Image (cartoon, helix red, strand yellow):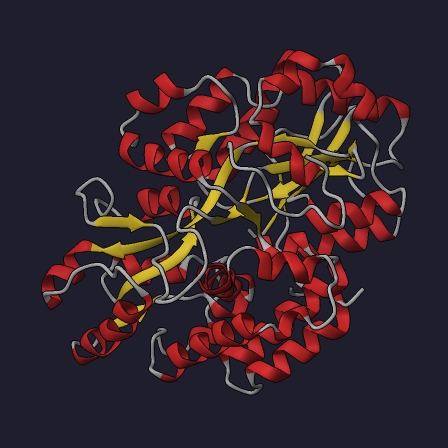
Length: 436
């Protein structure tokens, strides 16, 4: 499915800055002459899988090494855009596809891989078909889909719910009714790393869908005039502020970063009852939360309906995959090494097993038996079902929109959560950057 300006919504089949960039060298060692460079996100357990794939490739190709460097999520988003704009990008560019990839492609900053995929048809057929939507611009493929499918999930702490004597929400009204019950017990209803901005965005993504259906954001991405002022959009923005005013989020959420995983710690330590976050959060909680996951204390569900809403409950949002692009400024030898990595280093058997072991669903087809045999089988099946049964899988908004519109979106979401602008002001500010 091509990611044209009028084709954002992914067909179902199948994260996210400071001047101190917190970069650290990868584990593969320095690249040799004729090698390639590769930047990607750090943070366990995902970083270990990524670096492991690089190590395996370097071991098999001792004369053409890949030199990897890692960055924290928010710092990376700034660093990579600056480097690409200055013509100093790494050979291999890790990303989320979508609007940002479109901007790179239209500026001639990333390589057109369409003919390469034509020569590697079996490789293309081995991946989730829907993963190519956010990799495709005007019918041409500019990125290699990789890693995992990552829908956004509503997590909850079963022990906290039992302690307070309440049940998981089945509607938006239930969410609002739970807020005072948790607050009365000194428990934050929702953990949130609000300083990172994109974490706040996930709330609007679901409220827009559940209230107005997928068409509301589709109209915005297509640049329809005053799309953000649609009555259902204003209703969604208003309900979000109702939750903020009710004290639905942990105190001080605006100063908590997602990169620190402090929001996730609030959930598994019982200081927060719920958290809206990506499928990748499961592996982090499993790695950092002691026996929280293994004991069955972690609960998870899809985002509930909003009374009177038009959205289909199968709809989801998140990342259909992650993506590797090839810098057009790279030398011929570097490009050759990168393409070899795409063909023989990405989603090989050991990497697939590691993703599954971390509680993730790889975008590789034919993994059903491995998923079922995993210690994380229940969560993996839950994630697989969301991705494979969704009528609409919307790419994360900050990646679907153009970089300029995305930045305006994120800035205004912060103001919305801080109650410093009204829903109508938010809509007006977004209309100004997305109107065709």
